[in-house]
Amino acid sequence: MGTISSALDRPARTAAVIGTEDEAMTVARTLAGIFDQSGPAAGSTAEARLDLLSRSGLFGISVPTEHGGIDVSNTVLVGICAEAAAHSAALGEILAAHFTALEHIRSFGMEGQRNMLFAAALSGARLARATGRRNGTELDALPLTITGLTHRLNGEALSTACTRHADWMLIPVRGDTGRTVGLLLPTRIEGLRYAANSCEPVPGGTQPAEPVLFKDVLIEGDVLLHAAGDTPQPPVPQALDLLLEASRHLGAGRRALRQVLDGATAPLKIGLLSARLAAAEAMAEEAGRAIDAAQIGLAGQHRTNAFLAATAALAVAQEATNTIRETGPAEMDRARQTLSPPSLAALEQSGHLLIEMHRHTPETEI
View: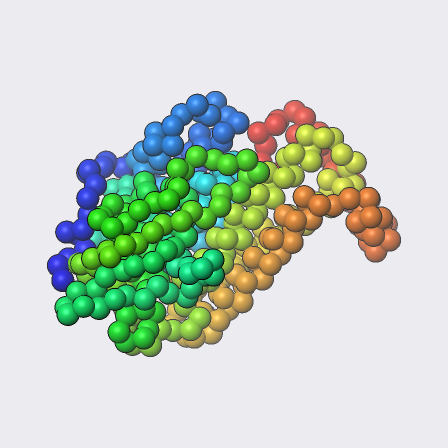
């Protein structure tokens, strides 16, 4: 096999350099507004938006400091993905997939792979993710076909949004050893076909997974991520994947809460829904700190704590977002019966404050 760099077929980019976590959040907010199809940039093309995203420097913010990045905390990644998802489901998914793929490289990549891909990310390259499937059922991994000294890939996968415009996709595969490993596959090679992947937003605020077809794709280059020895369980990339999925639900919850506020609903309902969303955001921040510790800690307990915290954050974020979308009179009656009078009074007061803030500053974050 050759090297991973030989498979890269992209023009050279020049990405901005983001130097601080505050700057990263500011850039994310700006891009979220650009990707928002109800905003002033609604008429721009997907290619134009994605090119701006690549040049923004945002793809390099989680690169470790020893490779030239600023290695932002995972709580910042939560905030960035949530902000993105609050305006564009596709943008939230693009960023979450990229950051999780970079964590796979940090955890399982060889030194040469890290050097190459981290440098590419700092220059604006993007990684997407895909999951194999067969007959409508998701697979843990797609099998690699081995013929002599070559490996080939056949089958179907579901990919994250806009994969055809990314540089690589990360997909789980299974080789002759029977172990599942990550395959870093360039997104524009012979035998790879995108059945959809138009990257245009869809109604409803969600971006469905899009099919990708592999037909006798030659696997060349050092593109398999092999963990050194047995993979630590639970692995850090799994925890980050769960956490960034939670962040996307938080973004959807913020978007749903804005819609409720637009309807000027009863203050008690606004206060209750906002409190549930804030609790979910606090749990996500705590999970981010646990993953920070797992990235530098050697003890297995660090990874276990990170996984448990991320799992809890995802469950609570999903529940909070679903509650915002579905709360009706029956749920409000139940809240009145179960919450104490001081809690109800405080929630109603917070609801009044939020409604007033929303009326005077529509762009205020919720």
